[in-house]
Image (cartoon, rainbow, N blue to C red; front, side, top):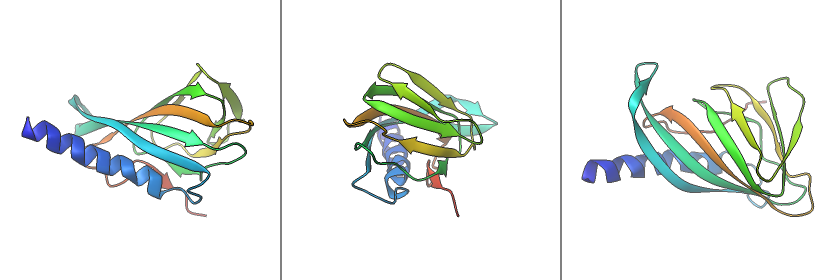
Length: 138
């Protein structure tokens, strides 16, 4: 039990790295929801699945970043403009999902609408990763 609590705590600290990656704290907030150690290994390494709730204010955007593992998202409310690598941007609505391969450039993360956007994001990453959202260097 103590090991599980410690693992969840470490995972939540890694998730907190997402919030630090943002340049405009008023534009986007990231709230850790959960972190679970995964029994199966990913590329031979111990892994954790972290879940965060992301809120983006109308007309605002987050910074370009990469994740050390695959990510999945579900739009809870509002509109979410999203693009990875050189693919064209898409505007997703509540109820729609997205997938990001490990290491891809998440270059657009924005709210094009007039109401706040909320989404849940799951990232599978190496256990103990310092950051699960690494800002892209310009």
